[in-house]
Image 1 (cartoon, one colour):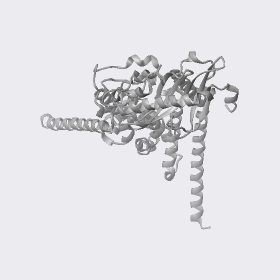
Image 2 (spheres, helix red, strand yellow; image 1 turned 90 degrees about the horizontal axis):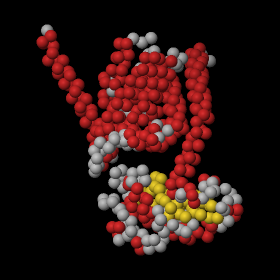
Image 3 (cartoon, rainbow over the protein chains, first blue to last red; image 1 turned 180 degrees about the vertical axis):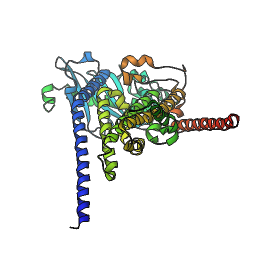
Image 4 (cartoon, rainbow over the protein chains, first blue to last red; image 1 turned 120 degrees about the vertical axis):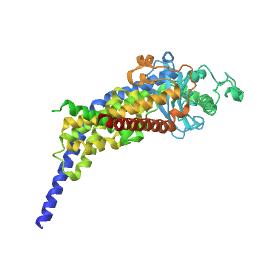
Length: 218
Length: 225
């Protein structure tokens, strides 16, 4: 080994070690911060989920731990889902009292609109919230509860109120208002809520089955 | 330590003379994307300023131990670690705001202005000066963000500070200013074109102002002589 290569090797080793030490210190700092913040982050996420669920299903309707009742359901055209989605079963005094469904309105103005739909045991909508969307800000985004109370009009509706042919926006002769200039968005939401009710009607018997049989893998 | 004159020149440099948003035109992506309202703009600005102050200070204090050829990876490592710490802290303590700013917090790492200051200034200067330089640069960016955010929010929706409850909790909802009541909104301002137009106008105004000052200085010379 010539002296030059020896020096080069020594230099490379030195730089490598320095880089390694910095990587080590960086990793240690990150691990420490992660450790410190993780419980708070998880708690915040759970609280947020719980708050969202309570917006679509009134807390008076159930006495079980709604978050713990989460189940995964396979993709279904009525829910608009292409991957398995979640649902939460509400019970009061052990009997089925309602369900919260995750659904997608696939035909929004700019793609999917993610919805959370609460339905009570009688098949009446207790609340709907948009959890994610890409609708035009200031135009189609009034479906978001933070922007306007438009979405509240679904509460109290069911498959028979209004009747099936009036589950449309007012412009198409239906029972639901929509703002001028943005009808594609509400049309998609109305359709998705209606399909979710159809899904509920089809699966109600399974939802109402006794918990022991349903929650063994929960 | 640092003299008052040095302090003044560092802040003048960061906020006016070499303002990242209006003069250096570095880090445009977050500037354009997150300036759709005042609260988002201010939050991202403060997060960036904190990262810049901390990273410049850290880079400067280790500058003598880092061989020249690996300085960039080491700087990036420091910046990335600091940004991740801020990202985690924001996720833990201001979760709703963290959700709104989303990917733009981790992306502070790739904001070239942070690395540019680390390499151009912090690698050659005292830690205290470097931290202040980083802070001043960050504040300069924050000011542009806030002005652009105000213009876009005001023109776009007629409000100011909407969404302040995301940062400060439900009780802050009353801080939202409905400057133009019953305003119908001007969508373009909130959409991306509004960001380009707004920033363009701000740069033009800044250049016009500079030209005017220079003109006045030229006019003043013969009188003084």
